[in-house]
Length: 446
Ligand code: ADP
Image: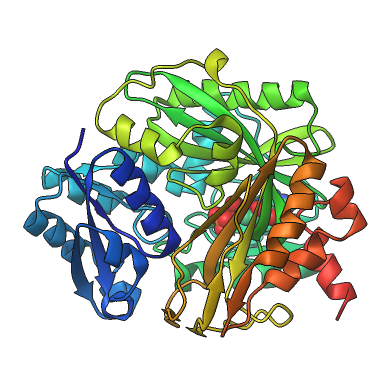
């Protein structure tokens, strides 16, 4: 096992990784920007290295500064967390070239899955169902031709896309030129490539994803699904498992399809296959080759520590269990709590004057916050994850109401009232929602 792991991230995920390392007797190195000198993970880590100014391009995305920090401190592995450099194949390669282990899949796998068109090809080849779509579209004429073939509505997507950027929908031929031009411009501004392609646009799907774990010996298991359909601007807000939309047969089928595809691709580490689910059918969207924000709900049902498994796999250990050994108990829900105005969604960083996290049976809070902590304005506005679990969905919902009510975060506005509103809606209580449901709810209340 590793002796010392450098955590190339910030916020709750840095603390999450630190905790797994601590429990395994592994020393940790925190890296931080000048703006994060007082962060909790920096205070708890065995060693900390400042890697640059507040701007993430000069700190958390600064590959050579991070690798230098690992060399200076003698870290034998780097965990990238999520976001930042976690899906950067060049970084993974650089890390390995310096004789340090990258905790994640092989660079080729990251590269393949980071290119949505290549990922689609790999998905088709490994037996995953995909949405009808096009190859790369060189110009508007090609887009028009493909849209006719696929049938409107369609969505233009950036090949190198992520974070919901570079996606534009067209409902008819009148809209295609604007959609194409805008998607391309957005892709150019945000990603390394401005290439775009097209998929059929599903109008009322649910977002269902499968968590997988694979070791370097070809053993693969899936850890069930997560329903992440409560979204705003293509960003997840609340996730739950099991999905209220799936029956046991659908659940087992998609889990097995995902598991076999990973075997076929020769994937290793933790990963998530994302699908859209509409009218009883699954369509592969993309694969995330990293830890995901919503992983704790899966941990709640399976009792498996996913970060620990990532560390074990990267150190060359075998999974040591098979699919039949995994059991799923109860129901879990996660709320992503942001420092934002719950109505306008304007970020609201600042000083936390008082912080009291809920506790009790089946309640987990993953956050880096403490009373007196100053949230820097430079990064993502997610400040806490509240995860509840119980034997039944109803039990989890009751517990979530209770835990949200108990949560005290003073000094900044948060999205706690939004979560309370969502989980009080009859549709949410009945589990009837799709990826557009939250935006419709917010529109109605404008
Ligand atoms: P990103 O990598 O930017 O997160 P994804 O491909 O994962 O992009 O899509 C993000 C979200 O966009 C999905 O969860 C879904 O809400 C929406 N979306 C993407 N593709 C389609 C599609 N073909 N039809 C309907 N919605 C889609």
